[in-house]
Length: 99
Image 1 (cartoon, rainbow, N blue to C red):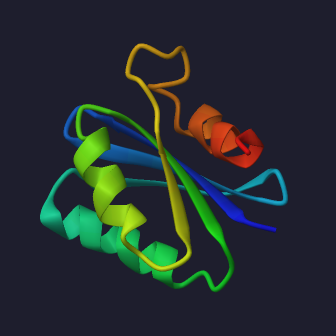
Image 2: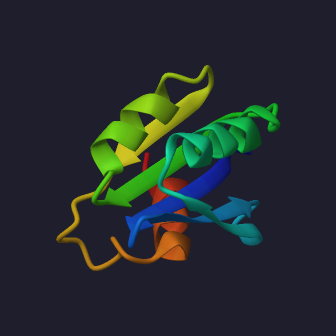
């Protein structure tokens, strides 16, 4: 099964929740900087299975495109107007349930 990750980009941070088998397995925060993006990529690269990422917020488009270029990563960019946009856990569940 896929690792499902939700990333809420807000207040110059990336709030991240990862789900494995539908259960929360990790919650993290990284700065919204190049170093933060590299840390996220490193985290995703450490997982050998399929990865589904839902991203929302200020930097969603750029971050989604950057992470989506990683092999095995499916990226969903969620509108900032969506009720789940500020909630990393809800975004991870969205990634888990999106076909």
